[in-house]
Length: 245
Image 1: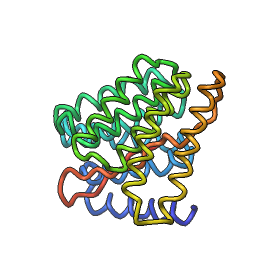
Image 2: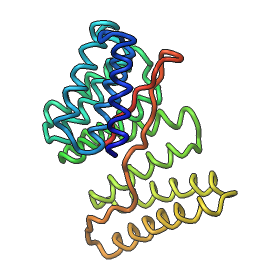
Image 3: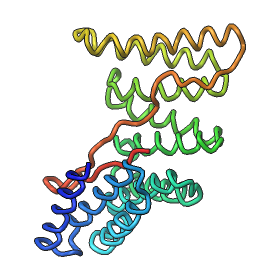
């Protein structure tokens, strides 16, 4: 980890000399270094890099650029991890507004952001706000494909959401749909199929059994964490990483 840390900061120093500190690509470097520290739980070290990346992006690209949306999203993830929930919600919503205007309402990045915003609302017991976000993320993904693994992930997230609210019939339905997609996609790969199938079959059985017994448990059936995506809207420019908490 220390070696990676040194190599990452070496790249930052080289790019600063090569590009200048106010170049948009240097802001990408800062954003990614912030995400590197956030992933390690080093929030105090992540924040100044995110702040600098955001300020450079705003100055050089304007406040309505997709990269600014990415910076805001990652700042929101940092604040969420720190328990600064008001700031987290503010930055998530600002990022959403920017991406809706600049990328279109059905862009894959928006589905990811909506998932993270839904998880934020769920974690703060704002279930009435979380549910439509989960459904909208699922709807965006279904427009692009009917059996993509991301759709299975969205269905799984909804299954967990309903399960935690004791809505076991709805949870079981979501888990069944997720399992069907995964098994269809993975039918030719035994190594991939078996662990995923076992996970979702356990989810379904657990949801069904809990429903029959009418009791609640906090056991998570499968990870609801959104997989990391890469954002490269400028064609050939350095990629910015999604923060993932």
